[in-house]
Length: 138
Image (cartoon, rainbow, N blue to C red; front, top):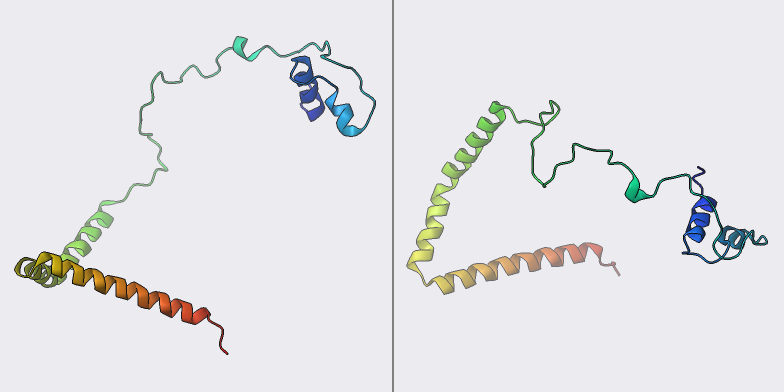
């Protein structure tokens, strides 16, 4: 069976989707047929084709593969990351404790609004710096 665009359009005409010789129309040639041609199909209909993959699961489920190329982090990387994370927490524990003390002692709404204002001001400053870089100098 030829797998080209002419054959595909002829099969569409055979099944009644097209009502004319589309390849002849595209190529500017006289039509070979009108209506639906009587072309025999050498291929079985899709519904009658046998199932090729019999190992297909009946339900969707995750099954981990036993592939040797799968990335697995060694224990030394996990220990190093844990050590760095713990060191960061230890070094910053005073700052973190001060933030929680300030939040408890002062009015929480006032404290959060002042922090939000600082964050907004930070992003405004960054935006103006970025815009100033791209402004044309006169």
